[in-house]
Length: 326
Image (cartoon, rainbow, N blue to C red; front, side, top):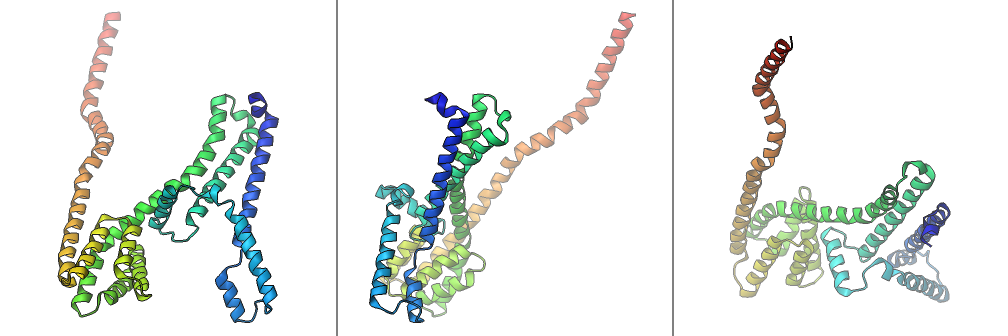
C-alpha cells in the first residue's frame, strides 16, 4: 500500500484529489461570498428593486436560509468546536483588529487553502517540474511537506506579529492620549465628549488606538453602559496598562471621586513607564552590539596587530629551514 502511494501514479492521483478539494473550497467560498446580505436587501427594497410580492420575498428568504444552513455544515471543519478554543481564537482575531463575526472561520479557511496550494505545488515540483532534483527519500519528503507546512503556519505567524505590532502601537500612543484626555476633562468637557475628541485627534498618529477610542465613544452614544464598554475595550487590546486605566475610571465613577484627579495621577504614571521602557531599550543596545563588535572589529584588529609579527616569524623560519637544507 505504501509503495503504491509513493509511486508516480499514486502521487499523481493524490495531487488530483487535492486539486478537487481545492476546487470545492473555491466553490464554497464563492457561494459564501454571493450570499445575499440583509442590509443590501433592505436597501434594494427601499429603492424599489426588491421583489414586490410577498410570495417572491418568502421564496427568496427560504433560499437564503437553505444556503446559510448548508454552509453552516462546513463550519466545524473551519473553526474549533470547543467553546474555549473558539473563544481564544476569537480573542486573537479581535486583538489583531479583525472584528468580523466570521473572522475565525475565514482565517482557518485561509490556512487550509494555503496548505492545499502548497501541497499541490510541491507535488508538481517533485514529480513534474524537476523530478530528478530530489533523489533521496529525505529530500523528497522535505520538498513535499515544506510548502504545505509553510502555507499552514505562515498565517499564524503573521497573525501573531500583527497582534504584537498593534499592541505596541496602542501602548506607544496611550500616554499621549491620556494627556489629551486630561486636558479635555479639565477644560470642562464630559468624559464621553473627551474620549470622542481624543479619538479624532489621535487617529492620524495611532490608528489602532484611535479606532478603539472611537468604538467606545460610538457604543456609549448608542446607549450601552460605559463600564461595560470600557471592559470590552481592555479585552480587545489585551494590554495591562489599558486594563488598569479602565479600572481607574470605573472606580472613580463608582466612588464619586474626581475623574480629572484620577487621570492626572494615572497619566504621570504612564509617562514614567514610557521613560522606563525607553531606558530599558537603551540599556539593551550595548548588549546587542557586543556580537557585532566582536565579529566586525576584533578580527581586523588582530590582523593589523598580530599579522606583521606572524609574517616575520614565518619568513624567519622559512629562511632558517632553507639554510639548514643547503
